[in-house]
Image 1 (cartoon, rainbow, N blue to C red):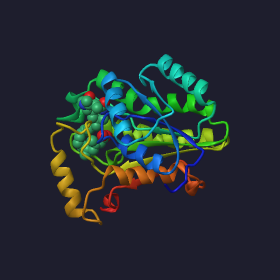
Image 2: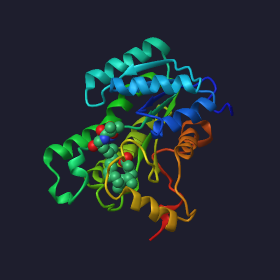
Image 3: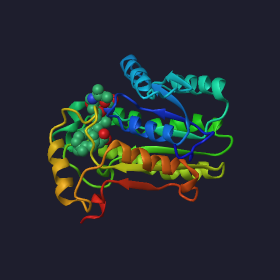
Image 4: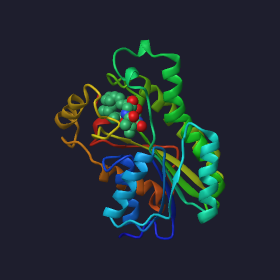
Length: 257
Ligand code: KAL
């Protein structure tokens, strides 16, 4: 317990199972003394989350249903959170989705529907939740989302998600400008590849992990706990002068030419 977030309340969106980046983040935030609120979409995720919380002896303030593709659901979730706590200090957005069919082959074949679904779930969702979170961040706050290097470079198969992450990172900058005057900071973590449920069954994932091991400055991959601690830094006052930024937690891979 390092106490960096003592007395702070943080909403964490996107725990699907123990491998989720959001779960690594939740553990770091709990260790820093934060009170945690979780949002989930699928009932299966709630069941997983409840089990994880019990096993780790983490007592959440609440778990609330939130479908980020639906404005009414987002508004209802934050209204429930408001009733429970009044004020929040942090928001972790760790949510993304693209149809499996769009994550292989050529980007040029992306369908209009697939493009819009990826943008809606993975990028617009940050804008929508930031708007609601802002109303509850009356003492200032920090918002952190999760990106990937496919936002700025072409990574095979990432395709429509790369364009969605580019949109997400641009949103981080525009939101940082809008919310800065309220003492609210907005940043992204760009994590190296991690074997999560979202990555499951996607072709080429193993090769990407091997490349990182061979080429990244640290010659290894990174894990959920490292993403958790970097996100903790961005949520805490240690990063009080940082906003609109993308922090790479990728063993240094992004500096390579
Ligand atoms: C180049 C990489 C290899 C993988 C390529 C694409 C990964 C895209 C991530 C995206 C979020 C995955 C999906 O939406 C998968 C979805 O179609 C099917 N899966 C699900 O529905 C599961 C059950 C749920 C939990 O997933 C979601 N999203 O709800 C990128 C790798 C190296 C790095 C990764 C995985 C980056 C990233 O963005 O996650």
